[in-house]
Structure formats: C-alpha cells, structure tokens
Length: 77
Image (tube, rainbow, N blue to C red; front, side, top):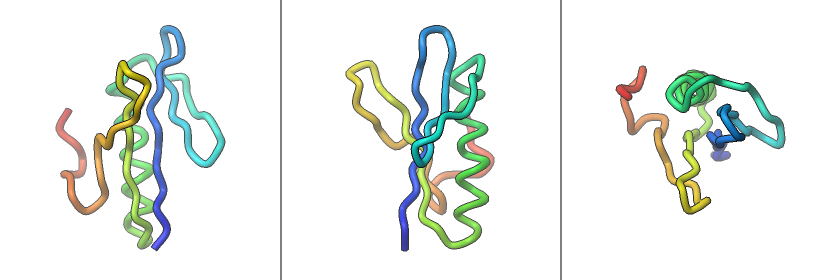
C-alpha cells in the first residue's frame, strides 16, 4: 500500500502544506494547516491509501502529527 505524507511547514508568518512536490496555502495558523491536511489525508485513507500528516519541528525534522486509522477524525487539536 502506498504511503502519502502531508508536510506542514512554516514559511515566515504563514503555514503551508507540502504534498507530492506541490505547496498549498498559505494558512494563517499551524492549526488551520493541520486541519486542512488531515481532511485531505482522511479522504485518501478512505480510498485505501496509508496517509499521515507530519509537522516540522524547531530542529527542522518532521514528526507524525496524525495518522489515518490510528488517530481520531476529526482531530482534537
């Protein structure tokens, strides 16, 4: 099963979603970007694709924030 990741990144004062080489946004807050990414990931998950939303930490590394089938939908942030 393919694995699709949505990456939430900060770009100056905005937040973006990166997915398959494309950028979406900007979003006004981290929470808003996560909610949009989780919604998109949920839809892919319902079609049988393993999906997750990853958040970039202060150290520049990504960590999973939400995983289809493991975390609640809609998420509690």
